[in-house]
Length: 441
Image 1 (tube, rainbow, N blue to C red):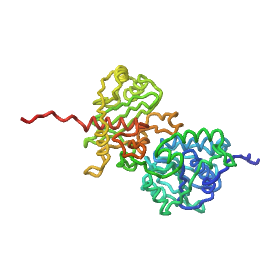
Image 2: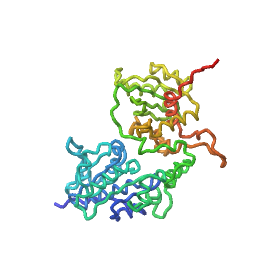
Image 3: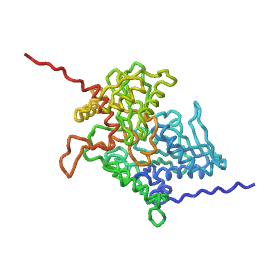
Image 4: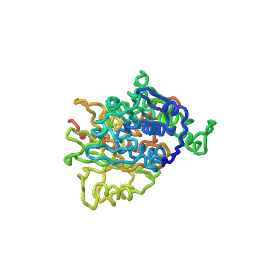
């Protein structure tokens, strides 16, 4: 009996087509949001597994959790759906010894994991590795992946990756500029969902581009135009994702906790959970960042997170620092059963205090850190509109208010700043204590 023919349709264009034929050791597909970069990389990974029995591949992102909601969904629903349905590809959930993987009946395998838990995935050798959203990785992560390309089941070994652009001095852009990594420029016209074969936008494409056209500042330059640029007038020039955005780690119960809230409904409601280590360093370990929910609903979610069933699983906060809206504060206090304190909202001192914490201290480490995957729930509406969905996505676009070419005011642009405001509040609470009123006689 002959095996049934499996039909899978994918018509790559532009940079996606070039990627499929490329055999360069390192290839980076760079471009704005919505150009089909991840789909192209996953299609090549799947095709190589089908054509090369016994091939070993790896699908990786900085954290395994983020990969689960992005790359794995695209692979399962769009790239390998027909092969999975036919039984040629099956999921293996992993064990203490082996990484989770997609297993092929021809002996090929695609391991799946995150660089936050590298032990299992980095213990193997591979023919091809796909890195999703490569700007999240550090240079050491990238080099660790490259060093595992030595399985030899394919005639060439390759590290492929996709990314939205970041700032112009990012290590990955510099690597491409020096020729160590081949960069391919992906465009919206490459995506057949948004543009037809004649280069005309589809109905979905027009709607999507309208959303991107509505962006402003550095986010528009990166997500609409695909440029590697730094924000003009960026407020916290000290911010560096490679330094301040860190992997998750256990937090001892002995560390004091601080909660900080910036109210919103149409704009995001933000609640950040911070822990303070013995050196006074602040660590954000949890964040609610969501629109169109009532304060009492947020309060219920907060209690469910910290005290499921009424039993606290972590230390209670030393203080709940809140924006000044009296009605919202009263509602939050009533539903949490705890009091709050008003935030110190002086903008310039707060900005300077955060900048000071971003700088490296005497031990070579900054005094303010944001843990990855702190977001409790991603706001689908903000995501669809290409707006920030957490504090770390706000920071690159947090800029001084410059109007008509005049020097910047001592005020930030009041847009996409809700997490940044909350971060200012907690730092001000810890660092900007009022000075004693002493009069010398």
